[in-house]
Image (tube, rainbow, N blue to C red):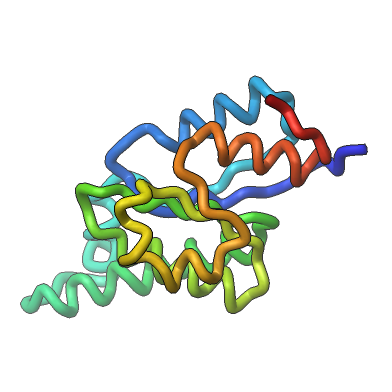
Length: 154
């Protein structure tokens, strides 16, 4: 029997609609899941620190403020999650996603990574912390279905 109210944090690249596809797939599978994610508006994510706390003359401190303000949200939502799905795209480097995976691992969270097989070598340490390494969004939905319902859907 399925447990209800699972919470899944969707971390990683923000330039495609992969989150919406997983959410739609989970809904179609009838999964009782609450999805959480970082702020996916790139400009807001980059500029939140200086917008709230004041400007910085040097880009390092601008980015540092934003990273720390974003980490408040990220850490809190990962702490609330049962599973953390970390997507690495091939166009942009998602160092924040690697941080999220490391934080989730340190907290004992189950991690599922998703990326193109060509990135396997670069992500071997991150994948080493994962319970599963998926190549497709459909595989992630099937992992969630199996974890939540014990159902091996085709």
